[in-house]
Amino acid sequence: MRLIQFTTESGQRAVGAVVDNNTVEQLKDVETIYQLAQRAIDSATGLEALATELLSDIRLDYQKIIDESRLLAPIDHPEPTRMMVAGTGLTHLGSADTRAAMHAQNSTNKVEDMTDTMKMFKMGVEGGKPAKGETGVQPEWFYKGDGDSVVPPEASIPSPSFALDAGEEPEIAGIYINDAGGNPCRIGFAIGNELSDHVTERQNYLYLAHSKLRHCSFGPELLLGDLPKHIEGTSRIVRGEEVIWEKNFLSGEDNMSHTIENLEDHHFKYHNFCRPGHVQVHFFGTATLSFGDGIQPQAGDRFEIESETFGRPLRNSLKVVERVIPKVKTL
Image 1 (cartoon, rainbow, N blue to C red):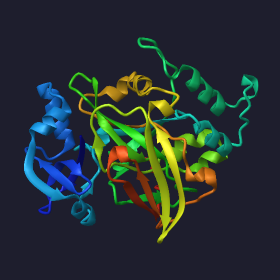
Image 2 (image 1 turned 120 degrees about the vertical axis):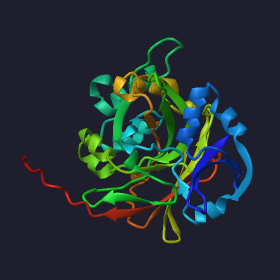
Image 3 (image 1 turned 90 degrees about the vertical axis):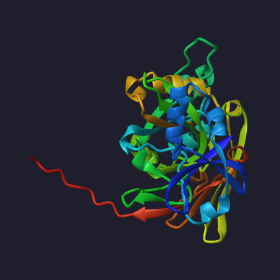
């Protein structure tokens, strides 16, 4: 089952189950997926079973929701500061090639000649898929922001004027809510655009933290249940009416150097990420970037990321926003 969040024609928030690419069936008695997840936790009911139980006879035109700009991100929190967006890198087979080229690093197999990026990738290949009950190697990790950093599907992703680049990263994101005891509960998965500043990162790989502090988008659909082992998709950039770049990408554990469980274990081992009622959005990484092919997106370009597994494509345009850096005052 795949769910979306949207606003009705009267401006009320709503949740819908995707029937097909043209039809959405509205759920009754819930306005948000956050509410739905809380009810599932409180009633010890599976999320898909609860959503099925709440299906109504209200069927809506999916395309009309999109055309009228009523799509929302498939998860948010009533208090944006209680939602955290983070992610992991160097998790996909082939991902080291792009990163190594970005950092002008040596991809030799001799450990003594490897730089940190290649060492991290090699560690993941060798220890990112541990046997059941064993602890795997921890991945590269980064922070992106809180709920205010998330842009809805079909909306423009802002890039600050001080940024040197605003490049797409087609990734899958895991969506989680922590129960009253602080235990993370996976709600589902969504296709995402983990936008990053690759030119800043290329200056020095220690600028990775800066390059990730950008807005992002995911959705429009939330996939419930387990993530398929093999996922195929396409990422493209459209400038005007012309597709200036397009490439297929692979994801799912068959194409990754880490298991989803291992990435989750290393994220949620930190107490700060297990606060009751908080939402976590965790990007799982990619091996496909237009930056690796010398593309530099411009304001007005449209990113399109799609995979049949996740239904409708994620589409966002890029806009540059003036960022006035505040001066610190002494009190």
